[in-house]
Length: 330
Image 1: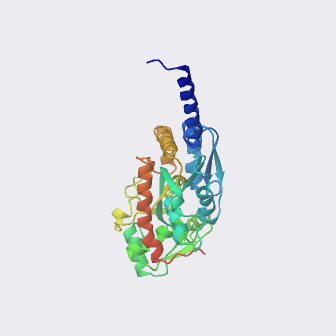
Image 2: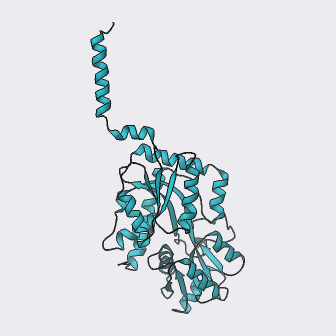
Image 3: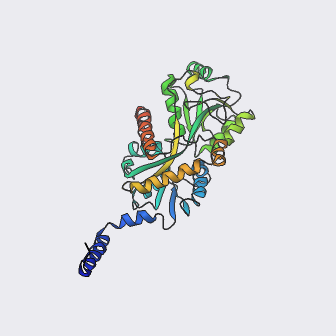
């Protein structure tokens, strides 16, 4: 049946009207991204997060276009995280964050700057672990001997951290809690750099250090001795170092999961597009090897669903540790 000219005109106008009334976000998603993406790293330049975030941003140029890194340090990562949580959920503001940092700021601060529920997980980029490292003068060649020494000499063994409430601090408290060695004393520093310097010099006997290429070099050159790492399995970059779990503390798993988050409400299609771009980056062997060489473990699963699952697992793992020490950051 042939349509009359009047019917064609009416149908054309109806289609235009429907397009005009459709949500603008639907059209924005189909063209995403149209402009540079703001990538907030909630710590000063040069740290662990930069070592993960900047290579990712560089890899995204060929997949998503320009990704502008913005270091926004302050309040233990809370300032930058809060800025992303309050941003428009349009895919143009992304956070390089951590479930643990989000948890700390939600339960250890009387007036949190953000709610973790205001962030949607996108993808894991890397996990870092902690090394239980001692000065060569400490009379312990493995973790069991260290725990025995700590129990026999309460108050004599101290460990350096990046500050009260830092992941290093909490991993040390987890070790004390699980090993039944409350006599190990925390010595907070303003960052792990000064703590490592004092540990190398023998001013403090022990550090809970984020395992990086620098820390592995200190271990290999004998300046520090890493007795165990806190991953479920041995590190690909250091298979000679045992895990805490196989060294007598079976539940000692302390990871720093570093991943991507977006403001809650960001369209699922955009979140999946960013996750897919990340999967493409991780398929590059050189990129993965760069992470491994720096002491990170690349993820096997980079889906938003996996990131959400890990986020929940981290909250369950760390909440009792934080509550057991009554951590308050204000």
